[in-house]
Amino acid sequence: MCGLFFFLLCHFSSNVLAQTREISDQEFKKAKDSAYQKTSAENYRTTLKSQHFYNISDKEPYFQRNVITEHTKNGYHEILEDIRGSKIERSETIEIKKRKYLKKSNGKWKDITDEVSGGLFSATVIENKETTEQRYLGKQTIKGQAVDVYEQKITRKYEDSEGLSVNEEKIWIDQKGRFIMTETKSRIGDKNIFQMTVVYEYDPRIKIAAPKIK
Image (cartoon, rainbow, N blue to C red):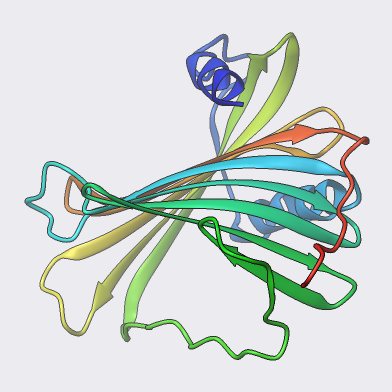
C-alpha cells in the first residue's frame, strides 16, 4: 500500500500537458462533485496520511494520522492509526447496512450505532475577509495515463487571529472522472499547520461484512 502512495507522489512533477488557467468556483465545485459521484459508484481503497502542528513555530507535528479505508456502495471498513509522540493508538471501524461497529487496539468489536459523537469546533470568519482562487493546472501523466489537476486556495481572516489562514486543496482526476489523489494543506503565513494526502485505488473485489459480536 505504502509503495503505491510514494510511487504516485514521485510522479506528480511529471509532464504538464496543458497550460494553467484560472477557473470559477463553480467549475472547481462541478469537477470535484462529479469525481465524488463517480468514485462513490465503485469499490475503492483510500490511503490517508495527515500531519497536525500545534504551533506555527513547531518543526515536528504533535499529531499524525494514517488511515486505510475500503469502500463499497453498502459501507466501509477503516483501519486507523493515531500517533502522538511515542504513543500510538489503533482502531478499526466498519459501517454496513446502517450499523456501525468499532474495535479499539486488540479489543473486541462493539456496536456503536446508537452512540452520538460530539460536534467539531468552528472558528468565526470575519465578514468580507474571505477570498477564493481556483485554477486548472492542466494534465499530468501518472501511471501511463493523463489526469486532470485542479487547485483551490481559500484565504480567511478570523476574529481571534492576527494572521491570515490559507487553505489549499488540490485534486487529481483520472480519465474516467474519478479521484486519483487529493491533497489539503492549511497554513498561517508560510508555515503549514495541517496537511493531508489521500490516494485512491479501485478494486471491484473489495467486500465489506459486519463483524461477529460476541
